[in-house]
Image: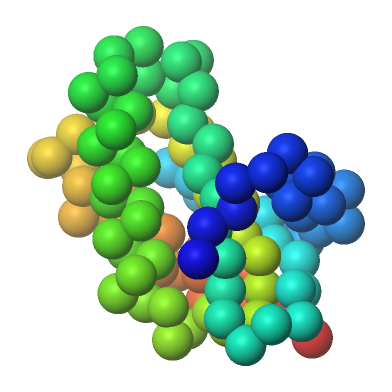
Length: 108
């Protein structure tokens, strides 16, 4: 599931717990559901080329899909902090997986 509406994003931004590293900032809040929902923020300041921004979004969505069992009952907003390409993709995925584990503690 995905966060799509502005009020869904703003609720995560207002009542949040966050964790970050070089690649991402992850914000979360409990949602009372049995599944997690994901929202993405990848602005033009992160990467001015649409190809790069789309690669970041695809990587985050796929990592979230493969690790959905680690986060349940939480709304997540993943904000990209810097661009990465195929060479750094594996490091970025590992960084996101570690942040998902940290942010899951906010569920309680």
